Length: 90
Image (cartoon, rainbow, N blue to C red):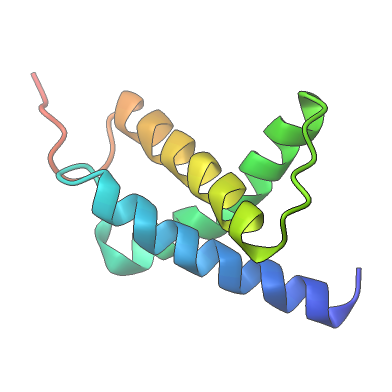
């Protein structure tokens, strides 16, 4: 992996985390937490799409969509495990 690709995935993860935080209102982890989850989500999204045999080749936009989906899944998993703001505890 080249430095350019690594920087691209970091930027994509940052954008995806920010977008996921906006979409997942009431269940995010704050700006920094959402950005970190976006970075993790970009890895998760890439792995899931790769496992499904889907390799989007539309450039940066496709990378953001894949990372966004991964970030949302990570936030949903975090909510299910009892973390995040807005989680209704019994």
